[in-house]
Length: 316
Length: 57
Image 1 (cartoon, one colour):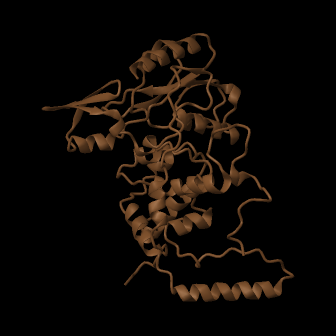
Image 2 (spheres, chains in turn yellow, red; image 1 turned 90 degrees about the horizontal axis):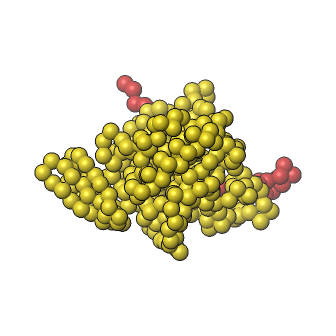
Image 3 (cartoon, chains in turn blue, red; image 1 turned 30 degrees about the horizontal axis):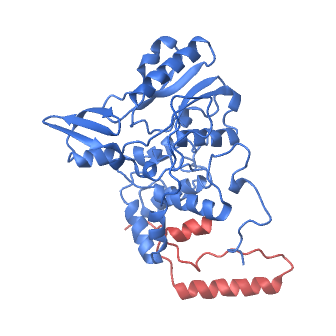
């Protein structure tokens, strides 16, 4: 992991010195452990701030939207799929980009780590191969990375970038098939009343801070439907129906586009698992249209095109 | 997909209907309208995903 950081720095320095790109987008160490932040670098002298470890889970694709300069960008599997989606949706042109691909082994769930140390303050974290060590005041623990992966990373089948100009390492092995939709199937097995209770509880702590929307690379509308006031599509209160409308529609706007990068869940201040909405759509997209978002530049997304043999059993 | 997601979050099947009826298909319109009314009546009043009017004194 740390050797990737060195390679990213070298590549960024080379690209910026050669003027191949105007800006390089990557991650730098956050001010607190486990919270790496995106950084845009335009000066080859500053590439040393670039960093890479298993806490680079925010989606950098957010910073590409409608840029007009030449950009170097770090991309894992899911991030690269979002770049594809951005290109397909005309938010950026392929020739503006120099994509530095990273064979990703999954990101660590900071909440799971905090639970493991009983919410004590973590002061330092270091990674060594498949293990990582957390240190705090009076405790030190070495943990296995694969037991603390983010939920979306643990069932990921696209670890390697689908589009890149250069890779920083050898591609990792992709698992053939994972039971990624087990949780969705559990909900599908519930009666409507039980589902209502499940989802009401799921979003009950929502503050409507819209962090999930802001972290999502798909949410690039100039004015989001929740911010629009003329007409006012959805109430701004934390009435359960308003909150549900927000989560439901946010998810539906991502139908056929979501790459399940997990940024929304990662940034939620109250830990809502809102991927339960988008995952259902991803599952339906797979079953009805054999579609997974962001795998190819050649094909239009399913909700973008019409086919005479499209699924239409629901129309009477 | 919209129907799928709505039912996934707990809207009862039978509350939401989709149909394509031409302006010349009066009989089909009557049939569909009646089925919708019957099925929704059978489900009873909706109380989920409904915003209640603020209770003011």
